[in-house]
Image 1 (cartoon, rainbow over the protein chains, first blue to last red):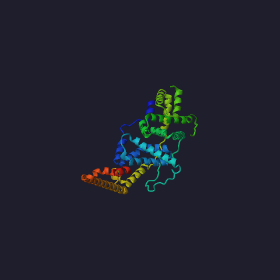
Image 2 (image 1 turned 90 degrees about the horizontal axis):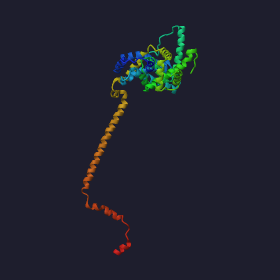
Image 3 (image 1 turned 135 degrees about the vertical axis):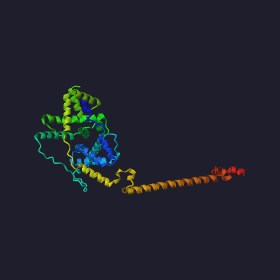
Image 4 (image 1 turned 45 degrees about the vertical axis):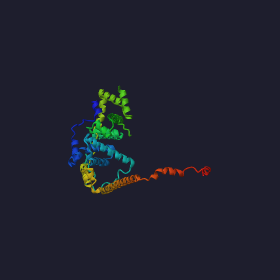
Length: 212
Length: 160
């Protein structure tokens, strides 16, 4: 059991239908592309949002991830899983945004948007249902986990988030993180977990929470 | 490894990357200690139950719009790179490339012409050299007379 937890984040699917879809996209098949976008928009949004911690910017970047997939489709080679390629693009665009914010900290909120867009900017389903008390409590715990996760260094956070998505092996995480060794991946993940555990332990025991 | 060593290793892991050996010891410890293993799994469970980030309902439509717009702006995207270079938006590139090609061809032609002229001149000199007059054979000795030491006037008078 421990071996499974340290070596894999989930099962690796060897009969990968995503590669087949991506090969159709490579030939210019828009319907296959639409299927891929539908299938992976959620994991990409999860990763990008938790990388940059800004929901509107995250959506723009996540859309750009898929646009990049289309624009660079001719360069896709099915040497590794499609998700490895996809998450690598997502991470790179997320890191670009973090660098851009570091250089220009004030201009992220008031950038002009393209005025010729036929779609409204962002349409989210209404989720304003009443929240039960226990759900509010677990909501508070989730907020703490989320906060602790956001405070992790980028590599640890990305590695843990990829684990969370499931089906992502350590080999894939190593590739997404820039071709590092498996030992380095294990160490990064273990380190991230240990930091999270240390941070959350007092809160889980006594409700005590320390801001970083 | 005992419990305090395990705790120390966890603390170490928060400060630096663990080595292969340390990771292996941790794996063995977790495999043999269900309580620590359960704590570890609880953390994974907490991460797994984090809610998904809300995605706009028009996400896919916006992406497809963007892609279609990009296709309209660059209709040759699906062609080979050299075919794309023939598109009208690359007109300046085409002009510069054509001018460069013309200059290269002109330069090579001119150089070839110069080489040919030099070869012809060398052949002409070689043919003239065959008819060199005999007096030119003693040219160096005659030239040396002018560079000889000043005449010994006393010896010159005696010889007279």
